[in-house]
Length: 318
Length: 276
Picture 1 (cartoon, rainbow over the protein chains, first blue to last red):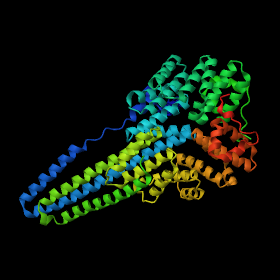
Picture 2 (picture 1 turned 120 degrees about the vertical axis):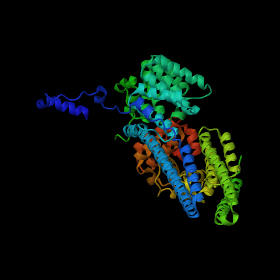
Picture 3 (picture 1 turned 90 degrees about the vertical axis):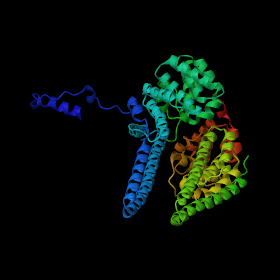
Picture 4 (picture 1 turned 30 degrees about the horizontal axis):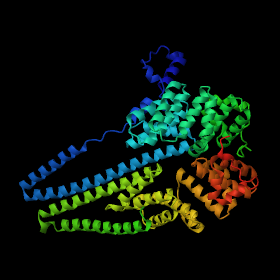
C-alpha cells in the first residue's frame, strides 16, 4: 500500500512538489511469505491468564458484601441470598460456555493441522503454506499443535527450496522442544537432507554421524538414502551403488514409493561408473515409482539422466 | 494377553457400576440441596464431600483417558507389550465416565489388529460399534475399517460388506479414505467385482501411492488384476511392475493367492526382490 502510494507520487508531476512524509525502509518491504523468525516468535502459545486470584478476590468481596447486608436487616439478607444464588448460577454458566468455546477453538486448530497434513500428502504445497502462515502468525492454542505445524512448515519450506529456513525451523524444534525419538530422527533426517541440498557437506556429514550415534540399532532407510545422495553428490558412485544394493529391501519396505528416489540416485551412480545398462534399468524403475518432474526437482544433480535414458511408460500420460 | 471376551464383560460391568455411582452422587446432591433447611449447615459439608468425590473420580477418569490415548503412539512404534500393559491399566482402573473405558477397548482393538489377531480385533470392534460412543464417536469410522479388514482376513466377505456399508454415507478424512480403498479393493477382489474395482483406476492409484509399502503393493496388485480382467492391459502391466518393486512377490501372493494370476504368464518373476 505504502509502496503503491510512493510510486504514484513519482509518476505524477503535479505531485512532485509535494514532500511526502519519510517512510521507514522496512515499511516498503512487503512481508515475506512464511517469514520464519516471525512465525517462530508469533506462534508461541500465550501464557495462561492468572484468573485465580481475581476470582478469589471477587468471591471474598461477594461474601463480605452479603455478610454486611445480612447484618443490616433481614430483608437485605434475603436479597443478598437471592443475589448470591443468581451470581453463582451466572458463574457456573459462564464457566461452561468458556470451556465449550476453548474446546471448540482447540478442535478448530487441530482440524487445521490435519488439513495441512492432507494438503501436503496431496502435494498442494501452496495451500498448505497459506494455512501454516495464517496459523503460526498468531499464538497457537496448544504447544502440541505449534510443534506439529512447525514440523510441517519445515517440509513446506524444503519443498520451496528454502533450505536455510527449513534448517532454522528444524534446529529450533530440536533445541527447544522435548520430542519423542522417532520425531527427532525424522527432523534430523530432514535437516541433513537440507544441508546436503545447501552444499553444507561438512555439516551434513556431521549430522549423519549424529544420526548413527543417536540410535545405532535403528535400521533407517532415510539415513541410507541420505548416504547414497551424499556419495552421488561428492563423486563417490561406487560407494553409493554398494549402499543401494545392500540396503534395497530396507529402502523398499520403509520408503514405499519414495524408494523411487533411491533408484534415481542409483541410476546417476551407475551412469557415472559407465554401467549404462544398469543405469537405464534403475532410471526406468525410478520413474515407474515417482513422477520424473518430482525426481528432477528433488535431485537436480541427476537431471542430465533424462537426455540419455527412457522413463517408464505410464498409462496416465497415454 | 488380555482376552477380548473377558474385557468386554468387565467393561460392561464397570460401565453399569459407574452409571449407578454417577446417578447416586447427582441424586444425593439434589436431595441434600432440597432438604438444606432441615439439614442446616451440615448440607454444606455433605455437598462438599460429594463435590470432592466427583472431582477425584473425574481426575482418575481423565488419567485413564490419557493413558488410552498414549498407548496409540506405542502401538504405532511397534511396542506392543508396553501398549498392552498400558491398556490393561486403563481397563483395570475404575472410571466415572464411559469415555476412558471405551477408548481402552478401542485401543485394544487397534493393538489386536496390528498384531494380526483378527478374531479378537473383530469381537472388540463389534462390541464398540454396538454402543453409543458419545464424545468419541470419531472412532466409529476407524472401528468399521478395522472390522472390515479383520473379517476379510477371516474369510467373511459378508461381514466385511456390512462393516463397509456404514462408511459410505460418512465424510472421511484422507487417511480414512486411503484405508477404505485398501479394504474395499480387497473386498471387491474377493467378491470378484472386477469392473467396480477398476472404475476410477487413476484416482485409486494416486491414493494407493500414499499407503505404506506392503499395503500399497497389495492394492496396486489387486487393481492390476482388475485392469487385466477388464481388458485394460496398459494399466495391468504398469501396476504389476510397480507391485514387483514395492513388495516381495512370493510373500504378496502367499497372502493373496488370487494374485498369482498376474505372474502366471511368465511364471512367478521375483524381480522386485533385487535392487538391480
